[in-house]
Image (cartoon, rainbow, N blue to C red; front, side):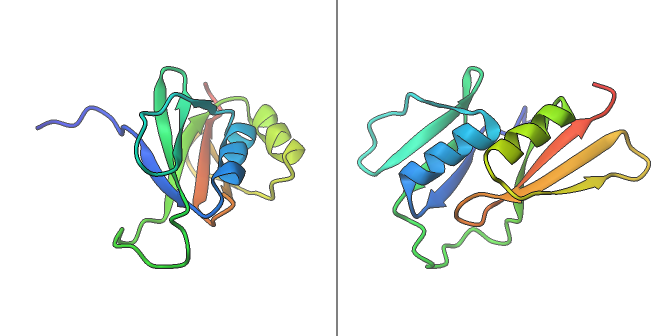
Length: 124
């Protein structure tokens, strides 16, 4: 069973409306179609793929068995545009240049504390 790509990430959020707005504003994901599941949620789309699935009302501080998940990373382009979008949204972030690689990373957290990494390659 060879893998072909990462399909999506599911995030448990305490306030669904706040998280929907965050992912649209911070990352430019499009709040789009989602099947009519019997629990609250949203699918946020990148182009033609729902890459972030939100599940509402499920982040009450209870630990779920997801292991040691640390962060989710997205590829991005136009470092200045990324910075401007985050600053416009009032999001505090930190940056790191990866030694020996043409890669610049930006880290920040969503409203429920999920760490997000944006990878911007300088030669793309």
